[in-house]
Amino acid sequence: MAKSDLLLILDGMKDKLDASCQQLWDHPEVGGTEDFGPAYLKAMLAEEGFTVTVNDKLPTAFIAEWGTGSPVLAFLGEYDALPGLSQKVSATKEEIVSGGPGHGCGHNLLGSGTAACVIALKKVMEQDGLTGTLRFYGCPEEELLSGKVKMAYHHMFDGCDIAFSWHPSDGNTVYDKAYLASASYRFYFKGLSSHAGLAPQNGRSALDAVEIMNVAVQYLREHVIDGTRIHYTTDSCGYAPNIVHPQANSWYYVRAPFITDVKETAARVIKCAKGAATATETEVEAKLVCGCCEMLTNHAFADLTHKNMLLVPPTEYTQEELAFAAKLQETLNPALLSRQKALYGTDAPLHSGAAPRDFWKSLPVYASSDAGDVSYIMPMNLINTTCWPIGVAPHTWQAAASTGSSIGKKGALWSAKATALTAYDILTMPEELEKIKNEFRQRNDGSYKPMYEG
Image (cartoon, rainbow, N blue to C red):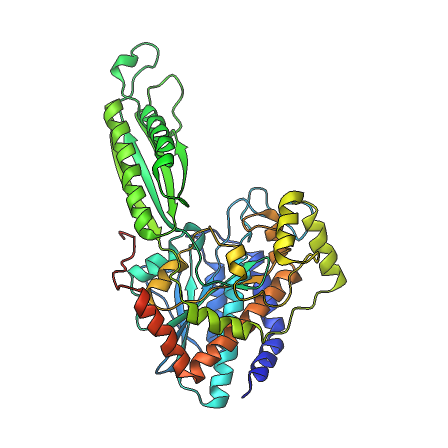
């Protein structure tokens, strides 16, 4: 079967794919509460002959498998939404549910596009008599940067040879490397309550400790490596101002280019917490929530992926879609939009066709993702595809509006095509897989351990 036939199969699945994208968009669920999303995708894949298994220790995740023997191909699918991003398919900010969740990162497209990809590959493998195993991984909690780390902790990725990943974006790009490594810690301070006016000397303020810790971290920022980011939020546990706070908490994210840098910086943040506790005569407990790795570079995999992206026809957009995209761009910061348009070299509101091979260097990904951990378990690629207008950023209402529109659905289909073509090469050209695995072995020292304590 020619690759053109594989593209035709996916074109024939457009209605099924669109329905899946829409159903998940209509039922947004934040990380840790996923129910409808995984159930819908499990049913969709089971109907196509995939065997679905669930790990009882992480019931929001699942594996849908078809085929036998090697190679074993892993396809990463996500479905969690973001809190507070409920949004209509509108060029103005309009909530569907006040304060409700929404797909401002396009995971309704991500899981659906990946599912369509593996279904199409199954059809081709059956027709061509190809051996190999397809595994769709239903991955929860990506927005919490924890789902795939927990899946790795529970050995759900064991036995795979190679992984395929993609993400919605404002353009069609392949990445050699991406993501900042990250770790999430919660700090629980415990002091002594007292009347803040009558007997403040008898109290030991946990809230003071939180604030002193935050000041200490501010000074720390000057003495960390370039690219490090430290974010935090605090919780005064609801105590009134006239009470010396016996409890107060803070929650920190530490990001850096490499997981080793994250661990070193996090250790210093913990020292800031302990110092604050000493200064205030309080106690502190530092608890790791989860940590995730940066994406491990694999040039050979990116090369193969880009070759196949060039084979996918550019997306054609209707006048209505172009007009909607342009309206959304009008809501953006003009200077930032102008810069983004200049990088893409177009005044068109939507990017179409594959960007040049090294275009990713102009638009590095400084976000974090638990997908980085998968790249330490096996070779993994990453492509971004056009699911919202040029200049729109993820985690925004504009992105949520786009991911519920036909623009987002076309981006999901484009990703399915590029990924399916690349996977077809892996199935039919073992020398390509070996080249990719050789580079993986050269870059990976085998010391990976999930940054999660169960």
